[in-house]
Length: 382
Image 1 (tube, rainbow, N blue to C red):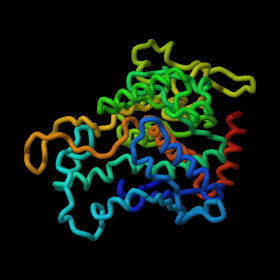
Image 2: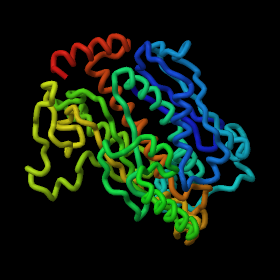
Image 3: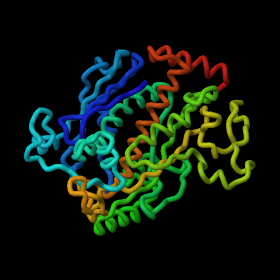
Image 4: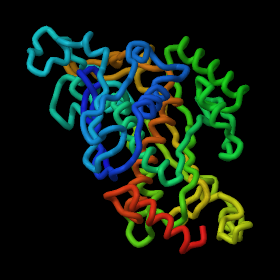
């Protein structure tokens, strides 16, 4: 499975085309829209989310609630586009439309202008905007549905926002219902309250905040991914996908960077037999992936999100039109979008993992994949 998105932040709509979708996967409109709503929620979001009520219209690939085996096309309307008709008109004139010429530090503005030769950062920021991730979440809902049919679940939570952290949490200690009930998606009530206070303080100071999200995959059988070629290594593929999310600056699996300072005996997970006789790991410091493949333990990864570049008290920049020092451009923006980043990361992880399952069990038909998975489980006594 693969996907490609199109659309600008203030254009008419966002679209996602998901290819290589197996036939026979049961889907509901509600399951896609539920993830879109989860992405929109979160303490610290800006005024744009008060305008949009994201819903996905299916244009192809699904009939009577089941995938056909052909590409699935999803469209999400941008309600705010009605307020930007002249600015984003595909066929109109740029005359009288204000250009964005003060690129923001930390954003794609300057690099994109230099790359494409434009003097208007609007040409760049509309596509580089994190608004595009709504299309990723819709596409990821298709991948989640495939994985659910194979007994795999993907979830996420927030471990820190700004200086406030609840620490690295084991999946068993994270109640999914508590996460979804929290407006910062943190299961620790005390930490969540401190996170909200930190966001309020940042808003008052014209600042923005980043943080750390954790993603957990449960139910994956061992051996998904590969060791023989670099491109087949599952952790590399997942890391690349998560790093593609705007503002993500780092990804780690399991103990991650902390493992670099410990001896091997405190890093590697001993192999044991569980009550059923299956080979398991006594611990999960590797985060569920060894040698580029799943090892049967939960996949646990963390992603670090930097603060959003748009500041209400902007940093200094160079105006591309005048060459003079200026305040960086200000677009309507969030103070903190860390809770939303976890939902987007779920989508990216699900898409990579669904594709890796197809590598092992086939691509055309869900029933064939399920039969292949059952035979594989029997062979490895899992």
